[in-house]
Image (cartoon, rainbow, N blue to C red):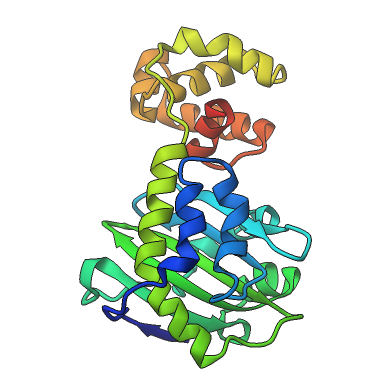
Length: 255
């Protein structure tokens, strides 16, 4: 595994011009790989946030020239490997908290390698990683088994592209990430019932309060139950909804 700090080399603007024109549009997500292909010939990519300071959140992902399994990869990552993933650790000395990482599949610890890389034919990864307090923001490009290894020239091009691409990706997320208006718990009962009729009344009560911005401690006080009881209802509701984290609950309605 290699990790280095990007130099001040100017980014290849010609590669980014097409992406700039897609800012704020949903096509940005599926078009990103095609635009960076001349410099970073990856078959898939993912942009996500993880770490102790946040719920793991996948912002964008897509594939090019192969079936898109990036969502399956993300779910495999959430099945356990994300809890002990040190392949994205950022050096404290990195300026602006940003580094570039390059790792091959054999260097990835098991079962991370088995569940994510080998299960989906990924052989190599280059990443732009930025520390954001206790969280990590990462843009990952994956070479798959059918492709040739990244060359030194391509890694150099990736370094030149990284600072501008990081800024573009973060701005795109800011422009397109759905925002939920402030609503009371009662406003969420009907949408929850329509989305998931199988939720029990108490499960809906907890989800409605999460969506309105209440903490689990606040929900416990509001409903007159214990904190472990709130967590039990939340976990049951999330299992019925097929999600793991509060950010995913928000995403179900933000679309």
